[in-house]
Image (tube, rainbow, N blue to C red; front, side, top):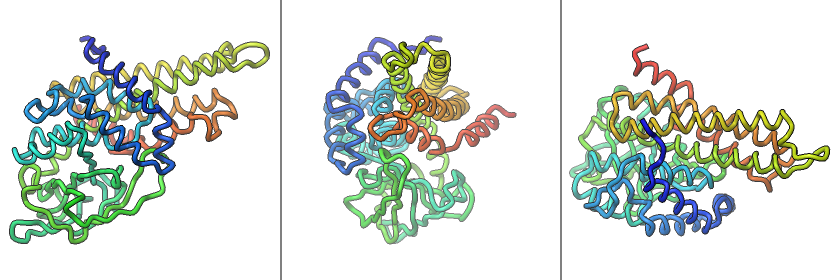
Length: 378
């Protein structure tokens, strides 16, 4: 099998890099951390104009009707520049779920606005235990006529204060098992959602607590059928984890470039430090980690697009390996830069923080290895 990018995907990647660079590249992430959150809206509008928001949206709703593989080069470019915002949550989680389980009214509203770059969606999944198990979902939804009234809280919600809509798993029945969990679309503009920001190691990726106490939503906001949302959620998480792998591969590529460039230009003892074995070998190991992660990630994306039988283990193995490889590489990049690597002015620390933040997001490496083992029948 040939998992390399085709000419169309390479063209997407080249134009995405050009667009992100024209907006400032890595400086976008720094400006976002400094409170200039409007850069996210400007970027989002530009992505919509270029068609990047509608890649996986059906043509009937204004998109390009392509599969998850076409997202890979765009997500890699997002990862290279540590672009903030719920891009992966919107295009790689919300879109496939709405395409598969959304009502026609939901598709007309949400998919069309996503394709135009007018709507950002995030996932409000975790609660106090932060566990990815059915019993951890305790946010309650009580029926009241044609509406549901929510009661409870979510935590570690990515980009809560930037999102227009939240996909929220809630309890509509039972207390512990998979049955009784339903998925709802909760719009910020129609509800009294409240948030408070959390301190976060990776300041380019903001997290918040979200309170849904007394939030009233129409039953029209239900995704799929009532009480069987856990399976739908898991399907979406496979798509989202595959997308996160692509962003990590993009970040790894930038890390290798940074180390290689510094190794060529930093002179010690009369020669570039890249000629010393300690630095040269470390960069080679970084490159091997990057290419191994890329191979696993491309296969995972192919498996998701083709709904392959080994889709779940392919994604989990890619997420497990890439999470740990990204941390190794980002740490080695700081070592290669010496004392300069620890300074705020250099970008090295931003990649290590992103790698650490993604390590346990939507499942730790151990969680995904166990999941893969179960899928393989071990």
